[in-house]
Length: 264
Length: 73
Image 1: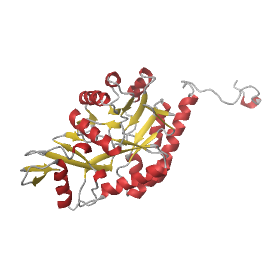
Image 2 (image 1 turned 60 degrees about the horizontal axis):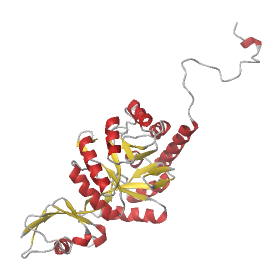
Image 3 (image 1 turned 45 degrees about the vertical axis):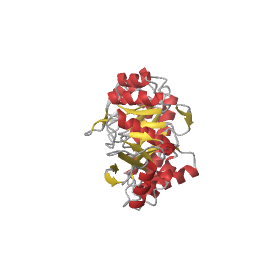
């Protein structure tokens, strides 16, 4: 089971609700992914465009059909204060203590601001939030986030929306080894199911993604593919992979080899 | 008295509560879809719980932010 604070989930795939060709495809993709937690945001309501309300209706319908927890985000915030305000607004709107904490430090690669992130996380945890911080793969930053009370960390695989997969497997593997008991979710940068599977095989607890499903040619089929990849990756991690070796070794028994195949 | 809702200038001849300001904004913009449970509010970047809409008085130049659920990643 995936443990997010006091919440246990069967699915290890968290899915975003943005960028789909239509709200119906978004809803069908979420159901196909078998996720139990979806991300969403708060924005100004444009009177001329009622799409936000439409999306909200679809999300409420999904929640009525199956267990699907909401994970509001603080996307677009550039300071701790902005993120804290959005988190408080989200708690009232969505009736949840969970918050995906994003504080962006650079608009070019949407890299998190580590200093503002720790400041906001500390404040929000004191106010009873269950903070899931979107962070880099920096070990010291991750330890600081744990020090202020985060029980879940969400390091990036690569920058949001790039689909480049795990840019720095060494750093990620180091995080897993140094923080063996912390729930680690790879958030952002996953483009293909194979990349999600790679992260799961490294021992990460879950994957959060959006664009890879929403921008696939067939989002619903891709949602199924990611579900299979995340499940398979976890099974492989639990099964324990073999040690790699430098030289070839025959898998078929050598004993009983016909004489014409025997090496002289 | 002038104040702002989502960056749009609003004017009230008399001091008003946040609840009154929101009521005028929703009516003026034809935001009939914006039912009470479909938005949340911050004033001058500070969150205001729904329970305080009636008692909070708006001051000259206040910046009110009205946000609703939207897709997100």
